[in-house]
Figure 1: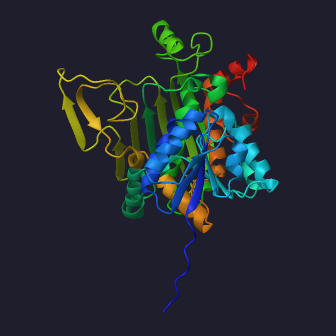
Figure 2 (figure 1 turned 90 degrees about the vertical axis):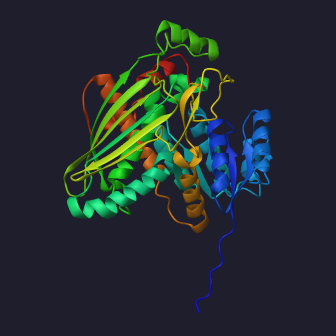
Figure 3 (figure 1 turned 60 degrees about the vertical axis):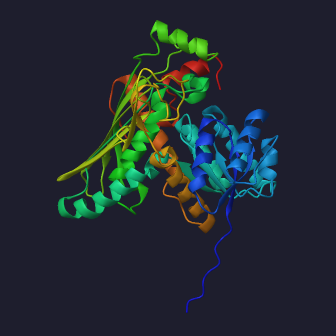
Length: 420
């Protein structure tokens, strides 16, 4: 009889950040085994303590708030960091993690970082360099790759359809909602741009993933060309710019606009030498029930389709039913009456459970995640190529050395007035 090997201990995780995305991750960990959230740091004491209390309430700890990043990194009950801070704070935090690990002040051995890895390609490459120099295992948190529909749909297509008729050649991805909740998303120098930076990273990477054969190296598809367009459809209009200025201090869409619509066509060369394409669109100017994710994968004799706003569960609420606004039915919910779709398990549908389960398993067992900082760099390269294409009105052919120092127009405007 074979002797059972001893399983590694649970992964003890420290959250760096306590905002919207941190709360989404915390919720997802209710469905992830062999993990504990043991510490949280953010500069706002009330926020970190509230999230720690929420984590403990879900019995995912024991978890405590830390008054400094140094305290979190030096804690003896933290094995890995989930980096969930705003984009303009990410590289600074990564440098601090690198320094603490290299100096022996921290025993952290792994890091998972929310998208995007960097506001520019230079930032993304430095994030990767710092992780590798510190000897950290690293994972890139691209949730849509791990969405249950993506995982199941890809498995079926590549197992049943591809052997009979050939590999897929077109992936379509769209993600839309009515706009972010925090002011820094609307500020180009802090966020890195507008909706292209914020959401196109999801769409191009889930498209690339669907077009890549299961188990194949991620560089199987060779990036050849990128064509992008951006639009300023809603939030630069006087009425809506005033709403943003009222709701979010420092957001000046008339003086410093960021795009609220983006479109992309990415061309790759596949392993068989043929071209395959990712076609994507994203927007902050969509007003529907809430967040909408549409995905499709097409090949010679088949098609796979998914839409997050076509769930099995819906409710109808008449005009006689009144209630306060919220997001209890779907993320970025826009109404409280009428025919309403309900995403029954947002953490699973959007991929947060799958990605966190995967990262925990890889970090515990010493295996490489299917999404690493290397992929984060590639995603940033695609987004920078799309921004450059939108700015010049030309298709960007890859490789393009100018992308190494390229800064998107909205971020460039912010830097010119003293931004981060």
